[in-house]
Structures are given as C-alpha cells and as structure tokens.
Length: 99
Image 1 (tube, rainbow, N blue to C red):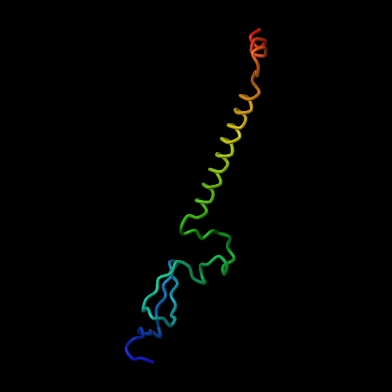
Image 2 (spheres, one colour):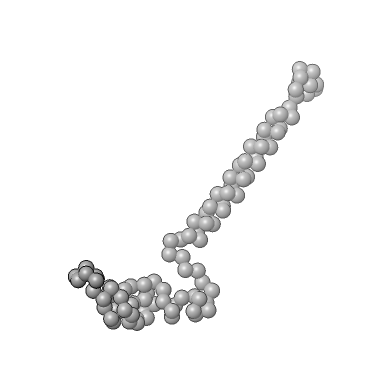
C-alpha cells in the first residue's frame, strides 16, 4: 500500500442522532450526525409513522389530485365534442329544430 494517501481512521467516531441518542463506531469522520437511529426508527420501535424528509408523500398526493382533475377536464371536453357532433347535420334538421 502507498503511504499517506489513505484517510485518517477514527476508532471512536461519535454518531449523534436527532433524537438525542449517541453511540460510537469506527469511521473516517470524527463526528457523524444522522436523522434516524435504532432507537427512533419505526422499524425497530414498532411505531407506524412516516419518515418523509423530502415531502415525497405530499408530492405523490398532489400528483394524484392533478391526475383526477385532468381526467375531469378530458371527460368534459369529450362530452362537449360529442354534443357538437350530435347537432343537426342537414339543413332540414336545422329548420326542424327551430320549431
């Protein structure tokens, strides 16, 4: 191995979670800050909650709502087009419609 090219390895790197839990691991960084650990992660605690840091759930719900709105607009346009096509087709039908 070449000398002086490898990062410094810390035997007792401190990991700090948002929940306040602290523990030590081996790492190339001396301090590590994390959002979830084994004490607050829903899989390990058995809680049912959503971990959504990038608001992915809200984005998905907005996307679904836009799809529903778009479908309403498309069906409305299709119905209007059908009504226009069902109108009188000849001069006689137009004159009969005036009565």
